[in-house]
Image 1 (cartoon, helix red, strand yellow):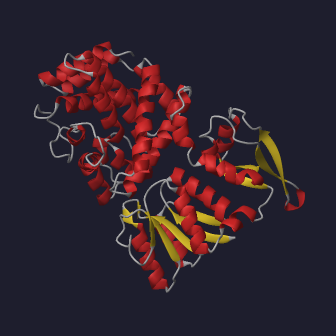
Image 2: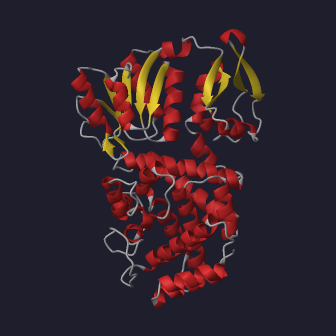
Length: 450
């Protein structure tokens, strides 16, 4: 079996890559989300036969640093770079692949580099049971095949005990194993290629399911949100994969909102699912903004649709920062955190501008969506945060500002273990946003389902 190093700070993509490459080309990968840890492995010459890396990891040119380290060590290891944002992408020093979810292209390239043929892939000998990441299993509505757990036996041997049968619901068993720190369950090896093919597309398929339970839709949509954030962090171009997953995720958010009539209930559902801050902020903000548009005199369906689009993308460039600092919340406080480096603070300050520039490249981007994102912290240039909210920004940007402020106040109540008080939140908002146009928007919140 070949061995290699995977350098990526995107957990869902990591599981997809590791699972597929092990199944198809018998490539065992050591995955590192930290570039510094990956460079240490190269220093120790323990990186194996191939290195696969995202072009950018945590804001650093990972591919360039890896190539520099290999050259310093005098090693000619093949480096496969996913994405084109590195200085060495599309050069003779590396093999470059697009920053998308084309797992088949990665498998094909790795097979080519390692000299693995199609016949080898089908006929290679494997153990009776094959590891299946719990993180991927949890994206299925029903178990795709019999699932086993590995148990120890005397003399160092192992038994595999079936815990779930094909087409069973996941129930609580799988989450219990995950909470115990068990990363993998097992499937029959003869089914591995069939299950791998299902797994790579399962997020998008589930997003299309109109009968998906609310709590599951929240969870799967967050996985889609994370995938989009990871892909946008890898490529300045908007790929068909990003467009497809984004469209489905936005539709899924609207589906969740339509089925949960109360702000407090939606917040509780998302908190119970341990939803990430950015995704929670995005969905809750969409919920509040769509309510305002429904209540305000000039509101229209097209405004609600535009705000759904805007809320999905507006904070995407904060994802890498908050993934590294999951304990942090509330965007305006981030620039004052000592734990953030200067480059991270620069991203925080410029995230609105970066997102606005990105959505302009979308085919059929809703008209004016880039301006709303640019202004969603009250500035006209998409840089920094204002304390003096003026009238010289678009009306929908004002709706977005008030919606975000409402959500943050709601979350503060929960952080303080207090029952949210709508009157208190509205009073706080009116003290903070004193101009008439903002207060008119705030008044619409008096009728929100709470």
